[in-house]
Length: 274
Image 1 (cartoon, one colour):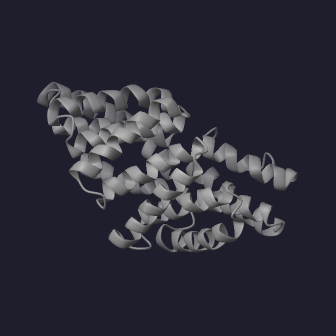
Image 2 (image 1 turned 120 degrees about the vertical axis):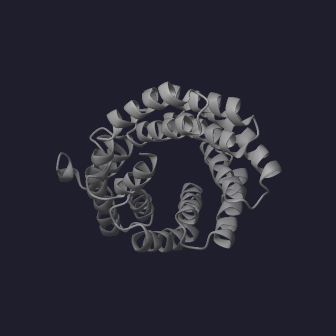
């Protein structure tokens, strides 16, 4: 079942993928109960099932229901593996990410910071997980308007991922997108523009046009085009973000709402289209 779930996870990036993956939710709950009954609460399979179930809730924007799952996952990881095991650090990072997506920086920041410190100590500064933590910590710093510290970590994550993972790895493209977003927010439009352009082109090649990451980059590139006074490009990019979001996210999902809001500002007659 868990192998099957890994395969099903990939369909979230195609038309109707999120809805299809959502159909697996009752089976995940049944699997969780079966593992608890037959293998006990210390089974690695139980941790895997919890990880998939909490990821599903995060994907669908159900942060309230994802939190107890993520907290339980971290507690079981600590009991099974210890406080500094990579699996425990992955669970800690996931809980921090949940808090971050809820907008609770006060809860996310210490978890992200602790995870980064331990990953640097245990895995080394260039391990992919450490580079992920640098990117996540930079997200918090950027939201706190500590732009210089955020830029330092974004660049470290981006440059490390280019070196270790390659320039078109999905994680590298995430770092590129985040660095471009920071440059946009700093008003460094001429530095942000080529980074957005190359990132979006690579995402379309690697991930496809109907992918959540591609949609997000289209949205932010549209924001940049607004600042550069290129309204037609902004509308085209925002329309792509909205069209993609309406196919892969359920109605009311925060990303979908954000993209639709931008498009409605640029082209008010688009409001309410399906």
